[in-house]
Length: 282
Image (tube, rainbow, N blue to C red; front, top):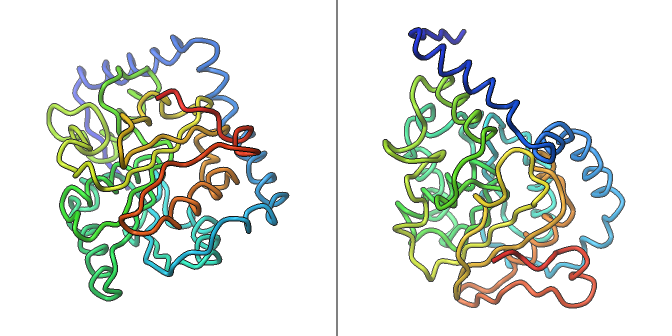
């Protein structure tokens, strides 16, 4: 059982954060409250469009590690992992149990070691797909062992440090403090994980972020990056909780993973894709 000892000041801080949720504007409140039912719709849509998802190019068999979001385990990514296996990749779970942040898993080294083990066993660079906090972890792995990473795909991940938090995001940080006994972020940092997740990562390492302006958990502004020759944002429609079962996520993920190593090309939106994937903000 977790024991939580708080000082009066800490209790006051927790109460203030709880009260601050009332300050969410009506749209933010609606997005938060409807997360679960919208995720259910996305799962139903996934079952309905199975044939469409076979239109993605076949994979080349390279290894892929899928990292779950905050408070989630490998069970949450099981459907996505099975789909990627079906499309021709050697897919691995993250294998670190429930994702309670870097502090509770003993720092990032266990995850780095997991990726390096796969890299050495297969002799191929590993693609990392991270959902929410899992995307921050993926960047942390690349920060420490970029030679073993082929590309990174993040799904609704709070990796952009240039926009101020809203009250809901601060509440998630507060929950992380309670579970970990300390802030997950690097001292002085603003988010889950690194102070600046992108700072030390090579600009030639392909990074694709996927985000939805309907995200009721992580403000979408935190999930986009400055596009570049090897960096891009893909906007789609959906919730945060439903990203792991969203058919648009499945299609775009398989499309990106099929890119040849050292052959990055931006995701195109011609034809029917323009209806499914809006032109990104950045």
